[in-house]
Length: 123
Image (tube, rainbow, N blue to C red; front, side, top):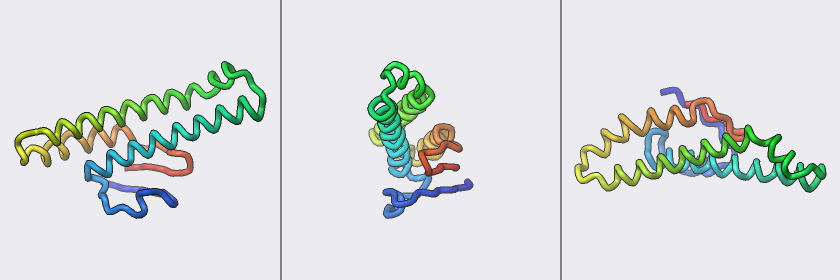
């Protein structure tokens, strides 16, 4: 697996989680959602408050960003629910199998070549 993480000053720089670890994956998709949410908020604020655009026009000009945030939210919720199901699985050996077979491919499809502001995930 090729890994290319470029996060300056993020939580990833001080954590020991690995890319294949479920905790890392959960943190990464949560981080991605938060960054998209904050940048959308900033864009809307700048358009409405500073440039004095009508909110409807500002919202429409940010629809691509809104869609990206919605997808990031779906990825986070789906991965969280899957992690809970894995955690509640009664057979301990199945945890590793489920993580290897299901979580990694799903995560890779969620974040493959997605940019987060100035940060880039390219698993």
